[in-house]
Amino acid sequence: MRDFACPNCGQRLAFENSLCLSCRSAVGFDPALMAFVVVGPDGVVQDPNPPRRMCANLHRSACNWVVADADGNELCLSDRLTRTLPPHDDTEAMAAYADAEQAKRRLMVELLELGLPVVGRDEDPENGLAFDLKSSRDEQVLTGHANGLITLNLAEGDDVHREQLRISMGEPYRTVLGHFRHEIGHYFFFTLIGTGPLRADFEELFGDPDASYQDALDRHYSEGAPAGWESDYVSSYATMHPAEDWAESFAHYLHIRDTVDTAAAFGFAPSGAALDRNLPGEAGFDRLIQLWLPLSWSLNMINRSMGHKDLYPFVLPPKVLTKMKLVHRAVEAVPAS
Image (cartoon, rainbow, N blue to C red; front, top):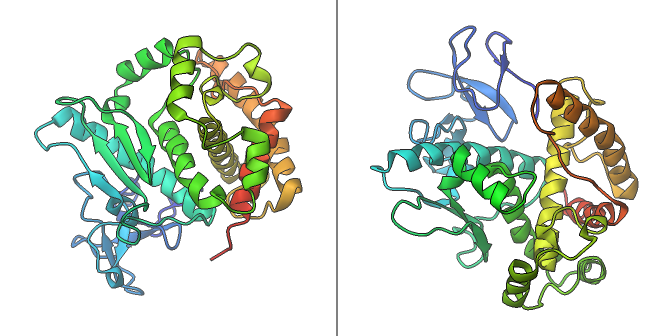
């Protein structure tokens, strides 16, 4: 994530800001520019080239993105991908919905920066990307992915609920953004791997993605992860099925690129280190990991200095890095738009 500034006064802005606390200007994030713009009291961007206005979900999902008038949409790219949201009378879920949308916008920026295709259901009704952000107040909701549809149980936004699940499932890390990055990995398997030229490399590293998922699920929850899994997998959950191994590897690739990019923006890593697609080939991936390993170690030590758990509580053995290198190859193979 970049280091943003108010275009009116130069004050630093967080990615989530819709108001500059220095000059009190209303601001909106323009994903086409990857920068903030000043917005008038009518919600219209003051620079009229091109005409833009605030997303209509400013107050419902705290969306601070702007929409080009030429798009003919009231909602921004990220909010348009949401197919289902909770009932308005479910106040807890609506608050969690706004937080989930905020995490989703962070995901969308990274996908756009990496040049990954974001195709919604309006373009591909059967397999296009869509999100169901659902309350579990009145029904059981399972977080997961199916044919481009990502479902999130909004109870994951509750710290107590999420921490209880993390402990019960033996996970070192669990966040809403992490869920999105994992589930989007499933979506991009079909986009980046599928039956294309990288399929054979995928099967060599991850296994057969068409193996019975139900059998793998039953085996994982009855027997657990195999002994010594730490040398080949980034997490115990990744051991369940090749599809989950890929999704976990994809999620960690996004974790690393975004964190290195943010560190570079704030002077903790060399500038231009991550998201601007200047890391081609295996050497580019090796460079990314060379940046990441000392950075993650130092961030973990800083967290410990504040009495917190490690920011990145994972080990990346050679086999895991080889898997992530395939993710890198697949991402880099997407033609620049």
